[in-house]
Image 1 (cartoon, rainbow, N blue to C red):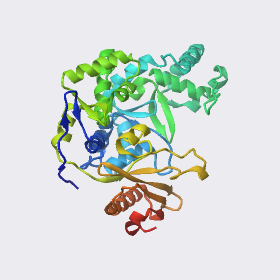
Image 2: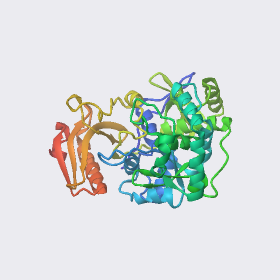
Image 3: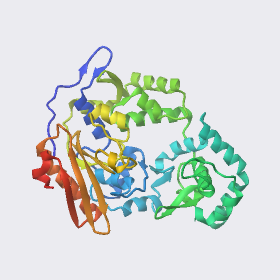
Image 4: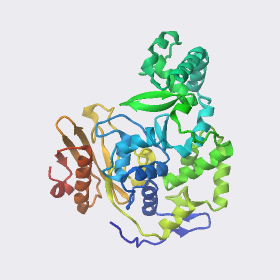
Length: 413
């Protein structure tokens, strides 16, 4: 569905251009590839989304579906999950690095990060560096065996566990010596994910996991900073100075600030004021949001969707307070276990508390919550989004629980 945006264009002041919240939201939604028309299902659509978002976070939680698969569904609709696997493990157009799926052309960016892992000033970074140094012989044995035998899962190296220095942790990784060795070798780029068997990663040397023509050189520090600044502004839609800086690791704050200033002076990014907050937009996106027609649609978002992952930013721009309550005791939850925000046009108008009961083939919607200003006419679109999700998940039925009064007529419950 499309409509023409009749609002007044952004107002210019001596300091910068003022952007109202409505247009700021629109810019965020469009940058997240969630505005209609979204990419079409298929391998090309998957690549468009991964490239547009920069990378996909991998999370195995399947209350509904794994988060990286759900992020793709929110933009593509009913796509074939096998297309992502093919792009990763057959075509090698994508690669996995540190719990994210990246497009292969981003390998120079990843190599920059690999070169610096685990450098930093924190206690964890020092502990990892010391632990890797203490376990140098084991690392060399692992790499030699992968070179001789080819890609293998970490369980194939169980005999190395007792030979490794104990990895101490107050969390679930305590004593998981072999697992942590592979995690840290992966961080340095010494090993890569060559495939998967379910959630089990298959580890290989870089030349066993990456295409022969993959770029080999890392970005220079100067190129890395400029790339990260432009990527942050472009992918966030509207980004504050601090939001940009947070996305440029291994770089002095002053260096990032000077690059931001230079790009603004060069006209590649635009200074804007959003609710008296100095922010930045990509110049071409600014022109589009200032003069183009608004595009709308309705979908459901993963709790880890890039558009809502920063909870404070989501609340500031959309007026939508959102917290993942999965680890909150059931009696203390306000909305539910694994709640999906509802995006309607350029507004977050509510949330659903779903559970995919795979044994019964039922998508159970425990509750549908609406924001105070949620439009009653959006109920039909919310219902379609829920049914579309159910169809993609393979559910034979949708079981509707409690529904907000504003949408009861459209959704039942």
